[in-house]
Image (cartoon, rainbow, N blue to C red):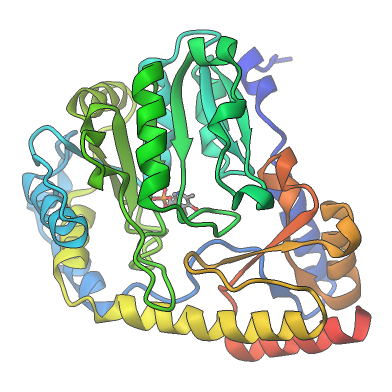
Length: 386
Ligand SMILES: *Cc1c(COP(=O)(O)O)cnc(C)c1O
């Protein structure tokens, strides 16, 4: 009876719904499923952060609508964190905008800058909201393939001129979900020059900057001189502090971009629960021991999984960051069929690469959100069927 809007019809199919269905069915059959599909930290939020929330939740002063632009104290904490972590100066008044999780900001940004038919340059495979936000805003995603021969960096030279003329926005995400690739300053430098020349906004998604191994330290694009002319960066507490369900992140960078995003948001939401903002401050300013413990935990899991997969002949390289392993399917098998095969034969869930875009075909993604013992069990099962 009710016809979906054209925009909604244009959204790519949400493949993960199908996977969830298959997973629920397998569980209902009583099978012992090992789930490498989940990009959500399996460990709890550190206690000192929860304690601040609990106390703040009991204070009626926090029960009102929060300020749209976020608490001044939270913006100050974010500025201090950026200064300490990246040596980047940010004005808490104009260059920082707290978000209800970075996803909403990432998806709302196109509403501020795209007119019907304008393009966003979107890496493929990618985190789905880059495409979703673009389409819902009436724009079109232009796919920049991320391929192994290019170290999963976009090849800017391949973007046609007629697309560039109508491109308003480019998304970047390093350390990358799903490929776990990383980018260095020379790449950001080059891309920044390209964006300035073509008057394109760069939206950098830095959700995984703290989830790193072997001493690797990712850069922020805002470290590049003059980045604030064209760039906005998105950050999140979800991965760094195991706070995915809390919904708190931020955007920072060029003040006109921040202002425009805030204007879109003032029409759709009314800020982040103040108690959660206070907990966010506690996360950024409190003891950071949790972060190194978290990295050690994932690193241990990474090493067990990589060694096991390589002993099966899979030829997987250990990622320097993120909790994802991006793996070529054997003999270039179809990623959905291979994921189905692993679920049917070994009760193992992985994410088919094509779920992140067509250039993800031929890969699967495994997330390190599974305890060591279970990883070992999964490896034993794989040995039997491969
Ligand atoms: C998990 C993730 C985020 C974080 O999203 P939140 O909305 O802040 O929880 C952002 N970008 C990417 C690529 C992610 O994988």
